[in-house]
Amino acid sequence: MLKLFLLFICCLITLCKSFHITPISYTLLSENIESVVNLAGKIQEKRFFLQISNEASPFFMYVTPCGAPIHWQLFSVDKDMSLAEELDVVSSISTPLEESEKFRLIAGEEDKKRMTFFAHRVPKKVILVVRASSPSASARIFFSPSLFRLEEQYPPLPHDTRLATNVLDDISKKDEVSAQITWKISPQVRNAEPGRYRICTIVSRQDPEFAGMCDDVEEGVEAVKCVPQMNNSVVMGQLWRDRTYYVTVFVRDQKRGSSSAYEVQTIQTPPSPFTEMVSRRKVPRNIPRKQKKNAPIILTDGIMGQVELEPRKASVLNMKFFVHPLPSNQSQTAYLIVHACDGLIRLNLFRNGKLLKRSESFSGFKRFVVSNFKAGHLRYQIINDDDAKKTIRVWTSTNAAQSPYPNLPDDTSVKVVNRKCDSATIQWMRGQDEHLKYCVYQRKENSNFLEHLVSLADNLCQGGLSSSTLVGCYVHSPTSAEIETQSVLETIIGNLQPSSTYRLDLLAIPMNRPHPQALPYRTVWVRTNPYCAQE
Image 1: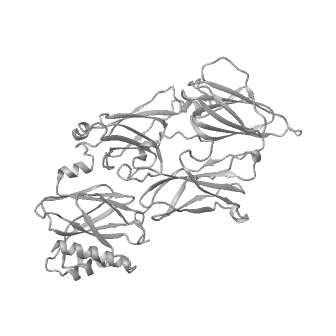
Image 2 (image 1 turned 120 degrees about the vertical axis):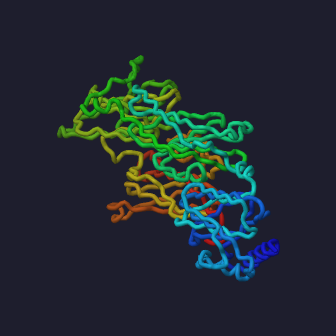
Image 3 (image 1 turned 135 degrees about the horizontal axis):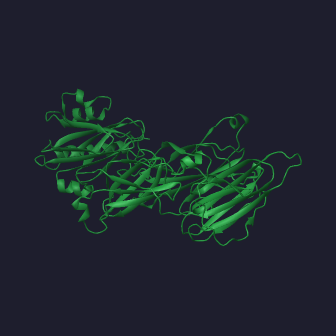
């Protein structure tokens, strides 16, 4: 009887497709196979018939929410119910099954964490209902009669899933600290064949509710590091002082592509030991050791220069910029832009021989301003913060309008406002320049792309990513009304593949500047919907 029922459903779905009828909102799920249920779009509830091979066997089920909390319910079906009645009730989403006398609620739960359910046995014909309150949610469903198969699907965790954290505070480092993260490992993971599992740690500035168990990457991720399955600790460096971080550790099964996450732990890094000294306008004496002096590089007003630092930590490069007095002897403002192309550096800024500013370690783009300056010279001292060779672009002038870089908004985030099976719509805040070109790059990520987030060292000065494809560039010239407001721009990224994760990078380039340079917005990741039929 069950085989006849399942055959009928398959034929019905095929018939709907043949006559271009919208498919009914339920389908079949098989045991021992993880199914991804997409709840995006208008239909945020789906119903499934579960294929139970033996109703005398135990029933184990895992439901993993992704993107939003998930509410699931499991119902048994009245044996006396006809096939037509059953299909009529199940296909009508507007009719809750719990209101029908023909269906009996077995169990249900709602959570944003992975949920488990066990029963000694369930009827051979059961219906699973999955709901979400958000249009961007999905769920991973797995059920099996075998506990062994269940543990084979998802990496087993120890009974104690708490993390131990220890902040390593080196007072010689003014702006950053490190943290050691320690966890327990289940015997099944530790004793598995070499290379089967990897244990990864994510450090982020926002609470990563679904990190580790889903393929989505949430905003605020700052570092990812993975270690072999035998390691029970990792040291995460370059954490800013006086900030709160969220730490997520998860075990990744390289064979099945599944994950299990430990409890999220927060870290509060200590403030700088020099904060009190700075508040009294005293400058700590941690200027790099004196090295063999070389003649400083003389910078020309408004001309971009490129320099290199030796591959040695604390190696120093000095540059000078002369500010000539105005005829009226008025105060001037000097602008400095430093673009570290491929790694961390620091900067000390001197005015007429006196230390004016000491920066934190940074990479990428940073702007400095020196105001109330009538005449004299500025010295820019760039310091290598590790042992790698560095390429740095430097621009300085008393005329900010000559800058080759765009003026980006304070909020450089890129938001995904709509996604389909083959496209994604993104929005961002317009830059402050009148004529900007925005270029979008995309890269399709593989199943274990989280492990490679920090291993891809792209040159930040070249524009785009060496491993990405240019989608297109869009020129925007704001109206007079838009110049006065922070308008939002939008574009659609098409020709994407269903059920795939893409990295999207947005770069802004000024159109009316000599030798224009690109600056990036914040990277965003998007996962396309798996099905196109209901969009």
